[in-house]
Length: 506
Image (tube, rainbow, N blue to C red; front, top):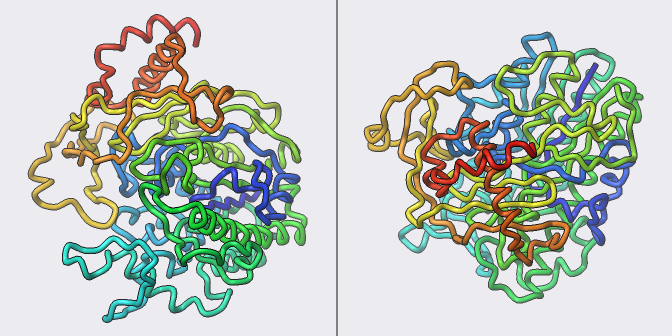
């Protein structure tokens, strides 16, 4: 038995042809849909990048207890479980966050790994002088007002080294992934994870892919949008075409994996999972990106394709609600291994076979922002009760943020606690003040009926459904061992009684 996992970062569902991505040249995604089961109701869980990867490893939600950070000492990691059971695991990735303080414990859970350098702000090449950045690019500056922020600076340094198609990090990543397949296709018991930062911003692709979309050359050069949308329609379409070009590059890379599986007749005994950690707002809802805004469908509702040779189901779709936390358990089940005791995700074999449900809700969100829940039809977004976003605490034994360790001052403000959460295995934890996020989008609690308003332009005002989803959220938080202060922060501490009213319907 073998398994191949392909993870694209920031692949927007409605830009993928099997999900309605009209006008996007992506024949291999269509080919993929013909060989797999496509899930129509797949949602992210914890956003963004590394929180989603912690869910892939552990099968548990991350965003209720801490923000971006490494795997914890008490975490049970899917690739590590596979390795201990004799399944060889290999990771090929150009995702630079693995090499930062906040991602430092993930790649070493695999038996072997290869890292490709140069994506976005990866501190790859040494340049003392600042790069030249076009005036049309929005670049956050350091406090001096003259020096570009580090991520933007290094992105423009790195671009100087993408001189041919073969030097683009995503293309190199898939080349190394297919190299592993060619070397090991006739061996047994392995799992390969090919993970690319593409099509994550900046939306940079070789000219050959941009030429598929002539309008990609219209307007000023602008491939890294962010924040509130204030651009004219021509610029918005320019950016969207650059994104389409990047998806077309991803599609061609995906084709190399499908070709290898065809070439070596691997479909009889090799599982294939292709998915994304989250999406992106490309000007919809007056916003660019995924941070600081509401977790709209364009961000949280993700593409997912699975081929399971045990089932033999292909060229079909499933409507059951699934999430990122279900993918690790699905891989463990494929190799006939038991799930960790505290996994919240469930194997998807029966869902692939017959659309059998594995969950009646999906939680999703970013630490310290709104907490969202869906039952597959309704999406309920719960915002902080007050603008100070308090109380908010992180619980961790790995005192790292995204780019840096916790400061001594922050640790001095922390305390050691022993919550009665079984998933932490009795470990004492560092309870650290959470940093309240100044969200660009602070709103009243919102309910959306996706049947009535699939683009979420209109809120649902049905009080009965609002009450039901609020009660479902309380239940989900309880089942996830959410810290008590989350109930207070979200204004749910006085509403727990609503759960009893609805419990007979679950």
